Length: 132
Image (cartoon, rainbow, N blue to C red):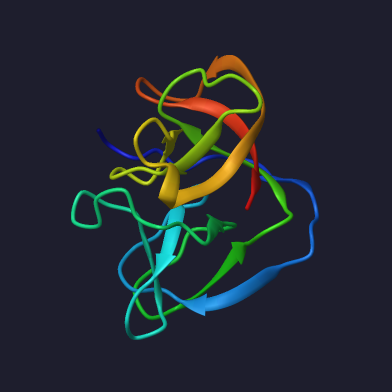
């Protein structure tokens, strides 16, 4: 699947934590991200296979630049792999989106607050999560 950058503001409700990190590789707004060994963040990808997401990228970023990450307590728009029911725990999937945790309960990245079935591209749904 090809990632399509989300448009507009993705912060629904400011929480407690939002941080700047150095980007490792290209990161797109709305993608699940995790911290690498060098303390930079990268998008969850097929190479990271169900990463332990620390948050959601607030903006696009190129390799080596600073990127804002909405962390725990923030409610943000992101891409869901499906129209996921509110209250469902989600994890950062291998394509940078979020998916229901079935079988991946140890890698929880958030809980779905709202998903109204709006498709943002051919493969993703506009989903609101609270980052955990």
